[in-house]
Image (cartoon, rainbow, N blue to C red):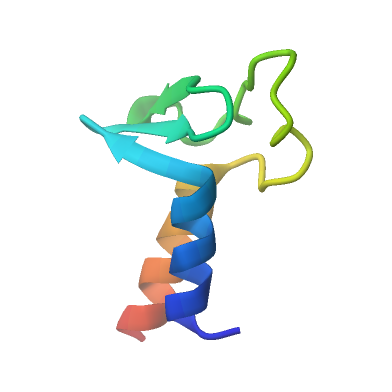
Length: 68
């Protein structure tokens, strides 16, 4: 899968709002300072278990891969 497609998938699941990654399913957020921790979704979030548990790490990997 190319980086454009990976980024589109990331943006479907997550949003960056004021330096916080926010789940588009439950609107729970995680600050960059907690990026090494697993993301905590709302108990009723349908995205929980369906998206990577460390969105900051996934974003970092996508951007690093693009940069080469």
